[in-house]
Amino acid sequence: MNGKTVPALSRQEAMQQLLQGVADDKAGYARLLELLDEQFDAAIRHQRERLGSIAAAIGTLVDTLESRRARRVELATVLAGPAPTMAAIFALLRPESRARVQEDWAALEQMVGAAKAGGKRNGDLLAEQYTIMQRVLHGEDQLYEPV
Image (cartoon, rainbow, N blue to C red; front, side, top):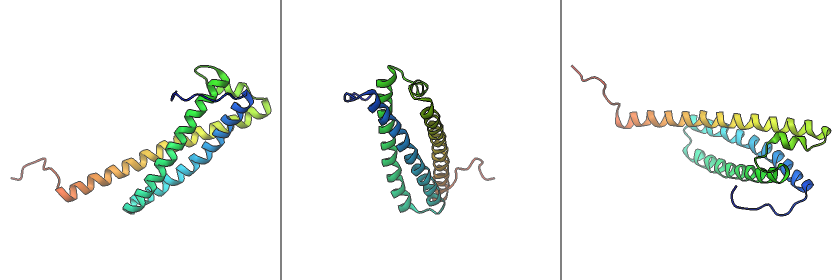
């Protein structure tokens, strides 16, 4: 963990905060996916200033998401003990709440995967653009000597 301690919370408060964090992360990842699409569009259009502002927004959002993830781990540890799993958290819920939370968690996991794929797509595009620009500016290394 990050050395912070979770203030004394009732189990109900810890669960409410954990579930609210999942809901907040769903909204956060929806925004991250939008930003990644905007970043891709800006990269295709070679909009350097726009890329910079989008990158700053992505950085801030990723920091927030990471902070919430760390908090979720702390809360899950309060609820389910050391090395908690979401399955253990789900087991603590009433059946009527459990299905909804499991759906939310599955949706969040899917969004995380989509964000990773979008980040890789954007990184690959930007790397390719950089490589092309280097070739244009500095020429391409000759593999064969002219005859």
